[in-house]
Amino acid sequence: MSDVLAVVEHRRGSLRDVSFELVTAGADLVGDTGGDLHLAVIGGDVDAFAEELSLAGVDAIHTVAEGDEFNHDVSVQAVEALTEELDPTYVLMGNTVNGLDYAPAVAERLDLPLVTDAIGLQNDGGLVVTREMYASKVESTVTVDAERAAVTVRPGEWEAAEEPGEPAVEPFAFDLDESLVRSRVTGFEEVGSGDVDIADADVLVSVGRGIEEEENIELVEELADALGATLSSSRPIVDNGWLPKDRQVGQSGKVVTPKVYLAIGISGAVQHVAGMKGAETIIAVNTDPDAPIFDIADYGIVGDLFDVVPELIDQFQ
Ligand code: FAD
Image (tube, rainbow, N blue to C red):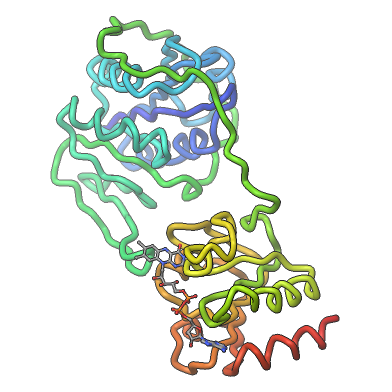
């Protein structure tokens, strides 16, 4: 029997999607061995959140009425106190900006090993975690050599739980040490996401270093217009300041999953591929027949983009 404590997340009055995915991940894990799934809701409108989280597979929801928004120091103390009270075998958190902010501190305070960015979890007489390495090129299986562990789970890897249930909702009070609360959220400032979100586009025309000069980007823009597509790019284009950062596809840019991804003058480096390998159809234009982009392309044109792109524009206009 292994009990699981999953710590949900909310922001500006709404539960984040990862909260419902944590429920599925936690329920699967207790399903392997038996045990109870506990949720912790820290801060915000905890009663409303508990109602939304009353889902099948959840045994108990522990509400901690402390503050409105995520707070590192409050979260660390609350999870530590809850873990001492409930004694779960596994503590699950989101592999998110918030989760990665406080999970290491929780693990350190509770003297637990921490496995980050899990994409699969199994309890097979011990915790077995699937993770990705080398910009998603390799999947690794980590066997945790400890009886208890803390894990952060990658958003989007588990289905969001939806089926209603009837868990017990229990307010949890603990002695918050205010002297250890060294930060507070005092307000929010939205970062402008530019005029388009490439992650929403059905068709992306993506330009790489093969374009040579900033003024040549216009040519690829013309192709994007002809196709009714959105323009994106590899990192060097953004590093050169030729397109804004929100157009960058890849490991340090955005992950995109369009129906069609047209890679123009892009070599297909692993860091780029990590952001676009989920596209339904990949078409590549490159002068180099050995460019790695052709390894993942569904259709490839070996040719000079300065010949091929005008031809494509003519065809689609
Ligand atoms: P290149 O690799 O220089 O490729 C240009 C391609 O254009 C070549 O294949 C060439 O054959 C072809 N070409 C040249 N002339 C023509 C022509 N006339 N017609 C047709 N084809 C032509 N990169 C990203 O893209 N996104 C990321 O998020 C990202 N994150 C990174 C994070 C880290 C930590 C690191 C270390 C690197 C990251 N990179 C990222 C950089 C990545 O390693 C590559 O350097 C980058 O993707 C290369 O971009 P590119 O394909 O446009 O350029």
